[in-house]
Image (cartoon, rainbow, N blue to C red; front, top):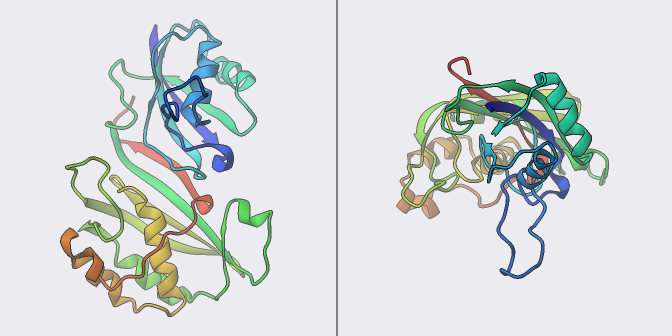
Length: 262
């Protein structure tokens, strides 16, 4: 028996988030489809008998991942590569295990994480594009690269991000440290935002993107972001920031960093 660290990728379109959900009404109806539920089903096919796998973090309905980390205790006598192939043979086509390795016995993918990195993709087009819109947000108005850069620079450092998200626990702090926030123009009409932080508030990245897009389109002054960060939770409604979230389908969890070898 050993604890295994698994790196997962998934298309979140048809998942009700990553975390396994309770049955909707306590009846015999099946639970909503989740990444955790599908992974646990595949593991049971390999003799796993524990109650639940551990995840590095929760992703919402429609959010994708190329670097989600899970952990489970498994009696496996073969190599990590063989575990990857065995799990992928049992998993559905919209989820894949990319890596499997033995970790410390007490490794926890969430509590041991030093930082997480998300990317968000969007493009500007007046017409719908069903293929591109599966993994990117389509906006109608062009974006100013200089405005996006200034907006992202204001996010760096430790701030109270209560104007950009909700605490993940009832009495949890809303202070987070953003280590990197960068916009990259990857095509004439397409941008990617990458943000790394020690942790994120609930829906924080989607909120950050929405506000920055408003700045990039000239709807909101750049200074509004710094002013929003200066507001305390009780003054959130007076932050001067537009309300709204960027759509979930543009968001991808791409990396979870750990400080020490696991």
